[in-house]
Length: 224
Length: 213
Image 1 (tube, rainbow over the protein chains, first blue to last red):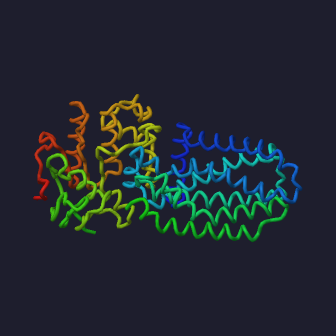
Image 2 (cartoon, each protein chain N blue to C red; image 1 turned 180 degrees about the vertical axis):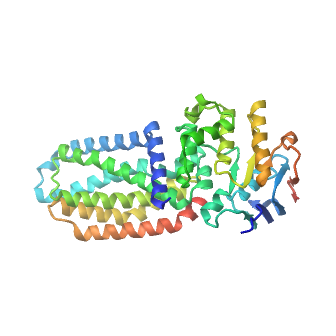
Image 3 (tube, chains in turn yellow, red; image 1 turned 90 degrees about the vertical axis):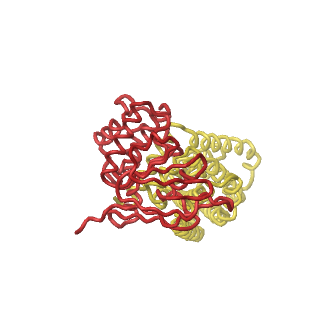
């Protein structure tokens, strides 16, 4: 069985559990919907801003919402396994790198579903104009993948720590800062109508480096 | 090719938490039959079995497992079956879904009929195997743990307190599983109750001050 097929099995298991329990999904989507609604009320005055001044503000707000909504659900990947006591069964039967890949895939799909709710909310409630839809889509894919892979790896790293929530935030902030900077820069360019080639290159490079690092250290983080 | 006898060997194993040794210098080897792991509460039985199962690292020493299994890391991982009191399976999934998940993720076939047979073998009734595990009683969860331990027909079987929470029928079921497994290879069974050791072929006693094989 191929590595990807095994990872897909892990992803489907996580999705099945989540659809039955609806813990992360409800938290993530409730946060995203609430944040977009509140921001739309707060931004009434900003709608009067000249169109050229709005993209940086809108891009920053969009990624703040995406990041914090993701932060309520993505770190649960490995933490729930430890809390439920199922981590031992996973470690006994499935290589860490497969579990990491499967959970990254699930988190990536969760992020995309969250973006699929947040972005239409932005378009409707904030009168946001995505000048380059292809640019926005590419940014969401590259940014979302990076967020998923780093969050999933950190979840494995802190899953058995005592102060895991604090630890996650402390480690995640410096690791995710370059990703968020590049994602915001790419969103600003895409909002203005251009294809964000340069920030996307940075995102893709970040994703590649994060993937390599996570997969090389998966066993150490999860099994040791 | 000549078959390699399945062997699990502890070589000079030591484990310490916060400086105090739980056991030290522990060595033994088993190729077939029942190895009784005995000792008082807190003597390190569960920790020892986790080390032997590859779920924990010793402070020093090593575990050697020799089997006919393919030399891949994945095959070696599945060559030792384990179940212990802190093993939990997914509560939101049914028993069949749990076993199917682990089989599929390990790249093994996971037909419904085969998995149903395995669950029946540990005494789970037809009506129970399609219910979510979170609805199971303590004894039913214990039976499911045993089914998980033998899910890949491992040549080495490690069971930590397998009789806890089981009724007479459940204890008989575990006895049957152990009897079949000890014919294939070594079975290491830890318990606080001497009655759980049915004619052991070898005994490892752990004491708080150290270990004596």
